[in-house]
Amino acid sequence: MAQVKDDSSAIGLTVPASLILREAGTQGTDTSRSLELETLSDIAQILSGVRGFEEKATQVAASMAQAAAADWAVLRIPDDYALGLKLIASVGGVSEQSPPPQVLPYG
Image (cartoon, rainbow, N blue to C red; front, side, top):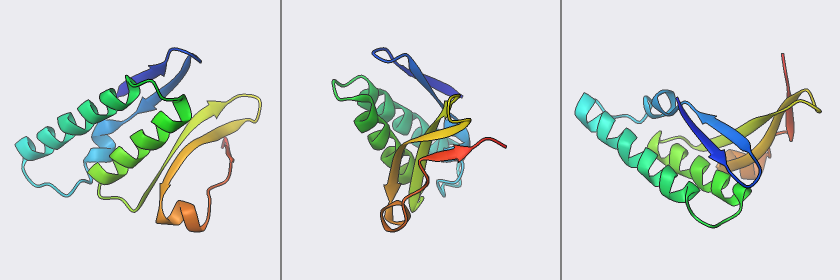
């Protein structure tokens, strides 16, 4: 798993890139690995930019959705006060038509 931290707020994202990219539709191991590395490089470039955390998270979700050929993607972080996973980014047609809940309860 790749772990990414936003230094300004000390919030971490754990991105299971290999699980997401497994569904990318590529057959060969070399092609799949190449796509995975390209996507991880894109994500690193996004996260090293000067934009805000939520904008970066939205771009990361879009990059992962594109690599996995998914119609939509959602990124969440743990929120101990709300006892659930807090929505930080969502992209794709489904999220625009029917936005995901702000907090997804644990359990």
